[in-house]
Amino acid sequence: MSPVRRVGAVGAAGAAALLVAGLGAPAHAAAYADPTLALSATHLSGAVGAYGDPAVTVGVAQAGVPAGFLRLRVVSSSNPAVADVGDVRQERTRDGGRSLTVRPRAQGYADLVLEVTGRGGRTARATLAYAASARVAGSAATRYLTGSSDASAAVDVGGGYAVVADDESNVLRLYDRSRSGAPVKTWDLGPALGWKKEADIEAAARVGDTVYWTGSLGNNKDGKYKAERNTVFTTRVTGSGAATELVFGSAYKGLREDLVAWDRANGDRYGFAAGTAAGEAPKRIDGFNLEGLEFAPGSTTTAYLGFRAPLAPAVPGGKALVVPVVNLDRVVGAGEKAVFGEPVEMDLGGLAVRDIRKNAKDQYLILAGSWAADDNSDPYALYQWDGKAGHAPVKRADLPTTDPGGWEAVVNVPDLRVPGARVQLITDSGAADLYGDGTDAKDLDHPEWKKSRSAWFTLGTTRGGHR
Image (cartoon, rainbow, N blue to C red; front, side, top):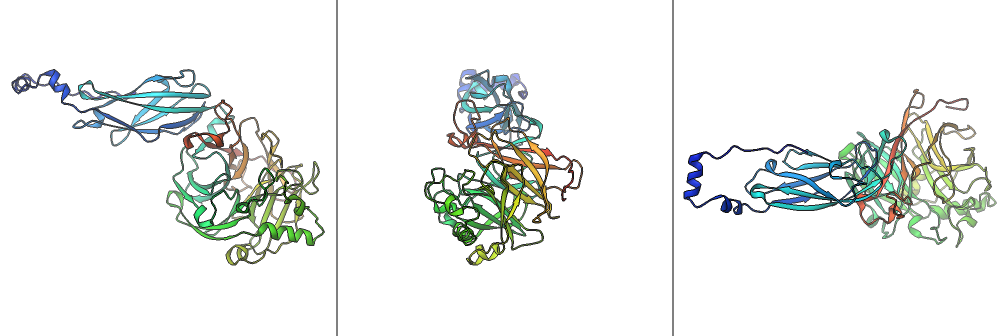
C-alpha cells in the first residue's frame, strides 16, 4: 500500500482561535464532506502467474482535501483463496488517484471491497468484481486482450499495435500488442455493412492502406444460410500505432455463390455445392468454411482464400485447400464477379488453414489446425511457405494445446531467415471455460471478463523445402 501523507499539527494559537470560533474537534470533523471513490471499471480480469495484467484506476476525492492525502485500502475479499486483500497492489497516478492490479492465487472469482478514508474519518466504499483465469504455459510471453473472447483475425498497424476482429460481432478493436487490457479504440462496422448480426469475420489481409476482411462464407453451426457471413469488405487505414483510424470502404456479398459456381463448372471437384447446402454444418471435413486470406507474392489483386473445410480430398489426412481469386480488388471495389485461378493443395499433415499471413519479403506463415468444431485439443502447427504453387510448406513449430482457446490469428510475420525469429499468435477463446464455473467466455456477462490470449513463439529452423 502507498504511505499516507501526514500534515503538521495545528499550533497552540491556531487551536485557540478555532475554539474561540466554536470549531472544536467534533464540529471540525463534521465540517468535512464525504469522500468519493470512482472505479474506471467495476469488473476486472487477470490470470494466475500472468505478467502485465490489466489494471483498474480508482479516483478518490474529498471536497477541500488534496487527493494525495486520502487513504485507499482493500478491506475484504469474498474469496481469499482466489485473491486476498494483500494480493492487491496500488500505485499513485499523477492526479492523485490510484492504479490497482491483482496477483491472483487461484482460478475463480472474488469481490474485493475498496475503502477510501478522508479527513474527519469519513469513508466511502466500492466493490471491484474480479475474475482470475488459470495459469497457462509460457506466461511470461502471454498477454490478454479483453473486451472480446472470440478473436479471429488480426492486422498489424505499426507502432506495436494491431487491429483485431472477432467472429461474434462486427466490431474491430485496436490493441497494444505488448500489454494486457482493453482496446484503445473500437469501430463498429455493422451499420456500414447493413448488418445487425455478425459477419463472422474470420480472416484479413492488408495491401497498402487497405485492409480486406472476409466472413467465413459458410452456414452457421446449425446448417442455416446467413447472408451476413457471405461478406467481404474493406477498411482504409490512416495513421499508425495508437493513432490508427479506420474508415469503411466497400463490400461484396456474393463470393460464396461465385465459389460454388466455379466449383460446379469444374466438376464439383471440392463439393462446394454440397458443403453449402441447407442443413450442412460448416466445420466438417467436407464442409465449407473460409478462415485464411492473404495476397499472392508481389500482387495487390490476386489473393489466396484459405479453407478450414473442406480438405482435399475430404478424408482424414487430406490436403489443405487454397483457392486464388485473381481480381479481389475489382470484386470488392467494383462488384465484379470473382475470377479464380488454379487451386493449391498443400500437405499440412492432415490439418487445414486457420490463418495465412505474409511479410514484405513474401515469406508466408500458415497457421494450421483442425477442420473440426471440437474443444481445440487437436494439433496446431505453423508452416512456412513461399507462396508458390507446387512448392511444399515446411513446418516451423508445433503449438501447445493444453490451455483453453484455439490458435486463430497470426499478427504479423517476422523475417523467417533470422534464427530465433518470433511470431505473435492470438487465440479464439470464446468456447473456453476461463474461470472454472462452466461458462463459455463468449457468454460471460461483462466484457472486462471476456478475453483472448496472445503469445509469442520462437520458430524452429527449416529443414529442406522451399524458403
